[in-house]
Image 1 (cartoon, rainbow, N blue to C red):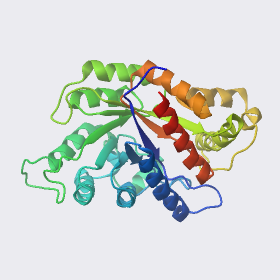
Image 2 (cartoon, rainbow, N blue to C red):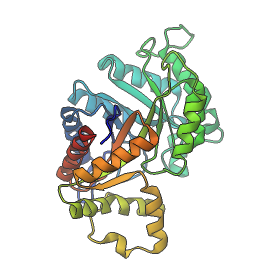
Image 3 (cartoon, rainbow, N blue to C red):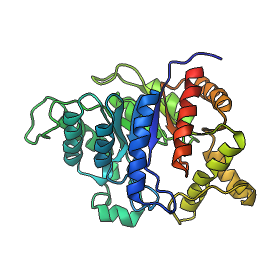
Amino acid sequence: MPSTTAKFSVLDLAPVPEGSTATDALANTRELACHAEALGYNRYWLAEHHNMAGIASAATSVLIGHVAGATSTMRVGAGGVMLPNHAPLVIAEQFGTLEALYPGRIDLGLGRAPGTDPITSQALRRTLSGDVDRFPEDVRELQRYFSDTPGRVQATPGFGLNVPIWILGSSLYGASLAAAFGLPYAFASHFAPAAMMQAIELYRERFQPSHQLDKPYVMLGYNICAADDEAEAHLLRSSSLQAFLNLRRGRPGKLPPPIAGFEKTLSAEENYVLEQIGACSSVGTREQVTADLADFIAATKADEIMVVAQIFDHNARLRSYELAMEAANNL
């Protein structure tokens, strides 16, 4: 098995399983973060989504503080903050405060999508006509707030703290922007893998060094549902598949319990959709995950893998991240 220097991290949406509450989900996030740190994961990111009963990470910066306060060495950050929803100064102050509280441990990943539906976007009062088109200017504005160059408006805390900024994306747009700005790039291959290889190639070819980064750095999302038994792993995976299809049907809800033989109940079209979005995934035992990760890293030469696991049972989710790290250590 070829060796790899890729790092491994966690992406958490603070899933709310059916029959539980957001309070339960946030307690689970805290426990998973402590577990991930003990296992040796590099960073722990939380994602901004709104108006979704099954995701408790809407107030992303608040939850980052919750996780950073429960851990001591692992980096913690946003994967990401959907910048069109917010004034850059507000984000600079929030993440400047987090960096002041937890020095050297905070990341700020930025996305251009609203992370919700159009009605909720309007309720957030930022994603109106034209805001998405201002994304590059908003990123530059954020960078100025974190720099040590004085301006008429300063973020306090934030000024001079140089919080690391990442660009997130699922298309070539984010790859181009990250390359032009000389920023690390995180691609959402865990749910939108179609343009992954093209985006990686474009980013690496066009990368311009910056004060933050001297060479390209690629992080890729990767679904892992691991268990001690292969059949159990496939059963556990059915919860996230149900959740994805419910979202596509316009009926998002809490994370449903697993269903045995779920994929056999679907149409050919639905199975095709799941096959396409699940291209960057591994389901099975530690040995299967080890082999899949080796192939994925060999193909992409990723610098870092962001492991995603939407699993109904919290203890099974903890075990999956355990097995995933064992697989990573076997590479």
